[in-house]
Length: 78
Image (cartoon, rainbow, N blue to C red; front, side, top):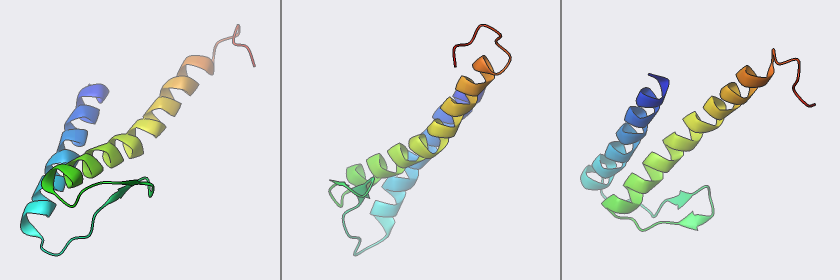
């Protein structure tokens, strides 16, 4: 269920990027992670929105998975 929600929210990020690029005029090009310049098109903003949401939700989710698998394991290597 959590992974389904993760995928759905990432899809919302992609859709929001398309909607912003479609309905807002005069936007400057987004920079993914502040480094990778993307075009100021619907595709560029959708990639920016989707990847940003995937990162913001994915990193904490990965940390929770990592910690939950290791916290009560007596054989875990430290």
